[in-house]
Amino acid sequence: MVQYNQTRFDASFAALSDATRRGVLVQLGLADASITDLAQKFHMTLTGMKKHVSVLEQAGLVTTEKVGRVRTCKLGQRRLEEEAAWIENYRQLWSARFDALDSVIEELTQKEKADGRRKRK
Image 1 (cartoon, helix red, strand yellow):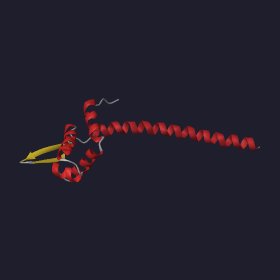
Image 2 (cartoon, one colour):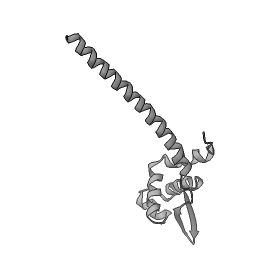
Image 3 (cartoon, one colour):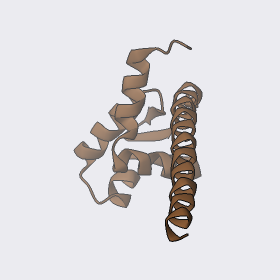
Image 4 (cartoon, helix red, strand yellow):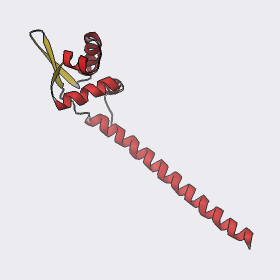
């Protein structure tokens, strides 16, 4: 099994666990934005938005640049490929388990139908 950097994974999933931070990523995917613009968009204080942006920045998902008094945010270089691979691995595992469960249910359903036909005769 592929070994993943646990600290980086923890930071990524912690950053993505919050709806506001996911929303910030969506917004930055459309265009770069200042922290002030993001705070207004999400109806929160500058301090609150700075904290969200800091979490995203620590995970490498966002970068910021300060020019004068304005701190502009943009998407970071991280593309979450390892995280997506980890999720895909578990998706395949669960898919296989559900397929096996479907087979058992189908087998039991067929057996039940056959037993029902025998009892009526």
